Length: 192
Ligand SMILES: C[C@@]1(CC(=O)O)C2=NC(=C\c3[nH]c(c(CCC(=O)O)c3CC(=O)O)Cc3[nH]c(c(CC(=O)O)c3CCC(=O)O)/C=C3\N/C(=C\2)[C@@H](CCC(=O)O)[C@]3(C)CC(=O)O)/[C@H]1CCC(=O)O
Ligand SMILES: NC(=O)c1ccc[n+]([C@@H]2O[C@H](COP(=O)([O-])OP(=O)(O)OC[C@H]3O[C@@H](n4cnc5c(N)ncnc54)[C@H](O)[C@@H]3O)[C@@H](O)[C@H]2O)c1
Image 1 (tube, rainbow, N blue to C red):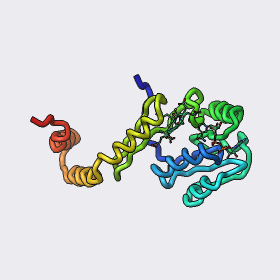
Image 2 (cartoon, rainbow, N blue to C red; image 1 turned 60 degrees about the vertical axis):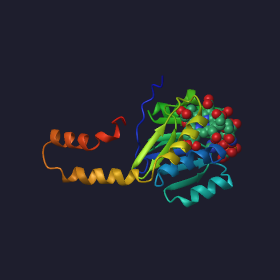
Image 3 (tube, rainbow, N blue to C red; image 1 turned 90 degrees about the vertical axis):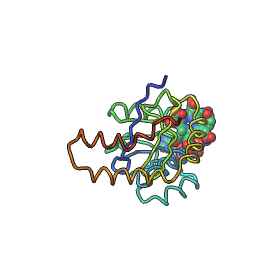
Image 4 (tube, helix red, strand yellow; image 1 turned 90 degrees about the horizontal axis):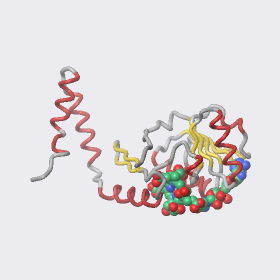
């Protein structure tokens, strides 16, 4: 049983601190920006790998600070992702973030995470997040790839059309709920 509760964060309006600029940090930043190209991210690391720089320099909302982690960098942040190769430093980041009631992810270290990063499928306005409860990130990746392939691009047209139809509805809340449920009934009807 997976007890995690998924939420969809406006990371373009929240401030994220990413600590580290190596391989693992590159993977985390890549998926963050893939899903949220305008995510506000401050990255603190004494060294940035070339592949990290290539990715970060393309994103206007990513700020790089060449320094070792210090508690002061938690100021003004909502979310923290620790991705250094120094376990005690990752632990320190986690502890200091917790003292401030910040949400923290220590990359690839489930025991130290408040939240996990998931597999993410985006089709226009539709977004699906996948979690295996940390049991198999590879399975999350494969499911993401499968859904990316099988979900049609037209799904976004459907959502936009439904939104336009909803805007035409005049009447009270109950009327609108009924009308929206009627028009989408076919989504869940079993084929004969
Ligand atoms: C989904 C994804 C999102 C992302 O990274 O943004 C993600 N990991 C991805 C890929 C991936 N990560 C790893 C491999 C190599 C295979 C392997 O080792 O298993 C691969 C596969 C590959 O790269 O092919 C290494 C790894 N990861 C974790 C551990 C520790 C452990 O399992 O105990 C280890 C071993 C480290 C070691 O050996 O030291 C842990 C976590 N990784 C999570 C997320 C969280 C759980 C999500 C869930 O509920 O499933 C969690 C718990 C915490 C977190 O980091 O948030 C992204 C796929 C994105 C995509 O493609 O769509
Ligand atoms: N590379 C992988 O695919 C992989 C897979 C599983 C586990 N891991 C583990 O994950 C950890 C991170 O690996 P990596 O491959 O990203 O390493 P890396 O060497 O590519 O990157 C480490 C980054 O952490 C930064 N860093 C170190 N000390 C810091 C500090 N005090 N403050 C801020 N930044 C600091 C470095 O400057 C560097 O940018 C390692 O412990 C590694 O064993 C890596």
